[in-house]
Image (cartoon, rainbow, N blue to C red):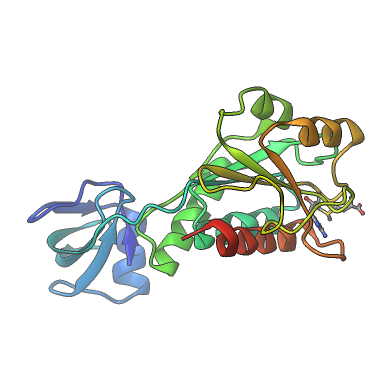
Length: 234
Ligand code: SAM
């Protein structure tokens, strides 16, 4: 299964770049005539045949659409970047769990000053290739949490995960309803009192507990997405 940027359609020729050719023909040992599944995040999944295989590139021909585009629920994951490997893990798991958009946010206690957006986007692509998804979530650039909250879209509910505030389980949180959602996970140092006050005062915010133990941010992200999927996903 391979992600390509190129449009996909009946009879469409899809050129491969050097990296894709290396993966398909070098690593996966595919050759001319073999069938490959392609997706581009827009046109569903297509069965394609290898028309030309080379070291520096190749061409595939789309033959049949095997699945349509499966849009995930309208769920954003906002998280404060932590150490590199753990941030990679969060992005990979968010793509697997069906987040529609992934937004790294800088909070008061976030140590990371920058992220490699291209690298994180590549992790989201790899996760979609692996889990059979036909959609790839966008990884947004790192933004200040304050900025994101200032532009908060009306109608998007927020699952504010916090181990300090006495939150309820998402199933039991008052006023919870279906629609666009976002999950927010803090950094290793948690949220500041100022952030906590602002987040709890937001009209569409629901403070949610993930249980009696303090989870690491990467564990918390996976647990929160699983709980949200169970309560409100499809
Ligand atoms: N401030 C904490 C401390 O230093 O003791 C730890 C923060 S925790 C490692 C990172 C983030 O995971 C938190 O900001 C929160 O979003 C989420 N989290 C962890 N455990 C949680 C729980 N039991 N309920 C809700 N959120 C939790």
